[in-house]
Length: 144
Image 1 (cartoon, rainbow, N blue to C red):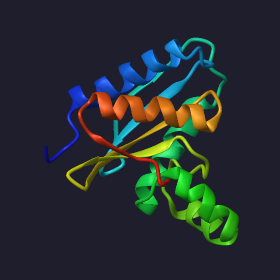
Image 2 (cartoon, one colour; image 1 turned 90 degrees about the vertical axis):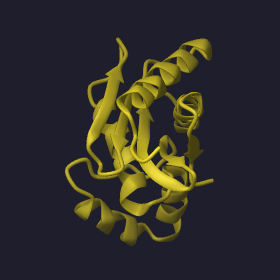
Image 3 (spheres, rainbow, N blue to C red; image 1 turned 90 degrees about the horizontal axis):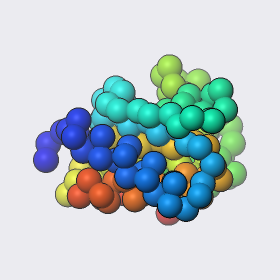
Image 4 (cartoon, rainbow, N blue to C red; image 1 turned 120 degrees about the vertical axis):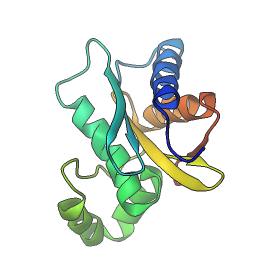
């Protein structure tokens, strides 16, 4: 696979949401970006708070901007707060949110895109993202 397909992106979204419902998570926003950072697929469940889609997009965008899952960005933010804050200013229109829930989508080591999820705890957001990526037959890179 050379590019993230629409079918794969839609599988990621659908499975992430199905996983969230099976775990009784709070309503989620799921955003899938391709390797260029362009929006590929997104869905926001009923009952999410106002800015969840933007937070999800920023988690995915941050992972792409730094080439690491947002769990690793969170760790780096603790050690290098000024660096992460500075990167946020140059990370494009989505910015970045340095907490788990932004997961790189890989195929044979190559980054195809990233999924960002927001709505529940960051750990639960990440769990839903990983389930979606794996359901699409791709590899999840959380930055752990």
